Image (cartoon, rainbow, N blue to C red):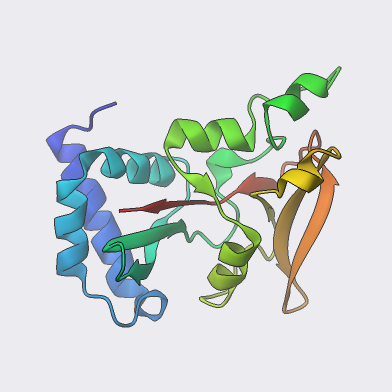
Length: 183
């Protein structure tokens, strides 16, 4: 997929406005080098466009000095609307005999060009605000849990972050996933 110039310009304006409105997420980062990095990596702009298009509201949450990369997370208050009602992965989807969801969190993340947040990422995100107070988000699941048929997800309830487990084949209208991309 290639974005039109208009789409790219509009996305960068949206990202800049969100960046400026949420300085608490990136206190020591300025916008100009972020924009320069974006323009140098059009393939990453496509991922951010897809994150935005599915309701993720991506924003910069960190800068890595060693790799000279900016880290974007989905920062929408509730799990992205365009990425809900998904089971965890393809194996889980194929194990369902009836009432299969349209897609999986892992497959959709790959299509968008992002990785699912890990438990550590999710805890970090929750330090930047209150997310998933009414929804929940699938998280990258450790192999040993996945081998046993499970998958993990997180949410924020009662002022605390909870990490739970569920059968990977389960899906709910209020559960989606959050992604991350480094640029």
